[in-house]
Image (cartoon, rainbow, N blue to C red; front, side, top):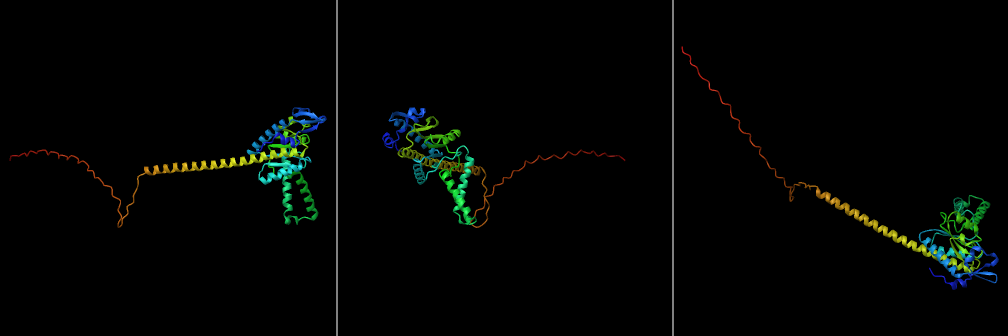
Length: 318
């Protein structure tokens, strides 16, 4: 992100404020002096505010946030459209644009406004499908085309927005007071170019500068858009590295778990006795039979025969 110098701001006419009679008292801190009844803005404070805003935008883009750039005044419209084209060519997302006028409810009533986004997409699809158009009369098709053009003029830069943005960058915060109030109500971070007729206390990151000169608006907006593009690319690279690192760690963890499982399986197999099959055949060795050891039971001692009683013979005399 290149550095904006005081000379560049001076050449762009960023130091010219409004007439003294149109001054906002809360913007006195940004006024350097008054010349020919016109306030001169302190460019040192302009540079300070621009650097702070660009740093915030870069960090927001890096972490994947979203932001709307609002530039509906005549001087800002072509600059904002050119910035949108440059962002699209860079292939960067998350940055939305409003150049016609701020439609009330984009922040405070997003659920209803998002229905118009869907309606616009459906009309685009309808107009690009000849078979669908053939089902209606020419008058009905013409009315649908007019509705598409009207919705496109309002929402062409925000129709892809999925939710309320994280921040809004406003060119001429005094003119776009409705957008400022909606951002305050929804607690959306506010950035913007605050001229001497604006209230800088309503803006989180005020950039005191001329919001009527095309050169001033273009210099500041180009710097903000450049910060967004750099932040998004840095964030994408960081997320890609993080995903690659996580993939490597997951692969290492899987290999480690596999090795632990294999070692546990090997230990279990070694603990079990190996069984070999007996195969009979030529050239094959049968499993050796286990030697059977016969154990002789101890003989019981022989029992003695009971002694016979002697019988006396008695002789009888005749």
